[in-house]
Amino acid sequence: MSFQPIVPPAGLATSATGDLFWKPNVAPDRQSTSFGTILANTIQEVQKAGNEAHEATASLLAGDGVDLHQVALKAQKAELSMEMFLQVRNKVVQAYQEIMRMQM
Image (cartoon, helix red, strand yellow):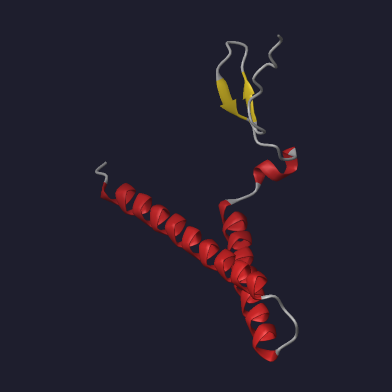
């Protein structure tokens, strides 16, 4: 009976000492992306999910043969995207406020 070795999930690698560390699976050019660019891309993705949900709902109400479960999935995806974005925004604002409270 042989066992398969345990392989770390994608994005994790091991150092020479066997410690796990995060190694992003992105091209070197993309690693220098600024925070503003990441934020703008995330906002666009959230807006896209909301627009897709709105279009699916409009198609369902117009009777264009769209499945109800597809509309529900798109609406749920849009809602979760927005919730996650708001939570990240709240954490960023909270971190900023904490930094501003620090005394130098």
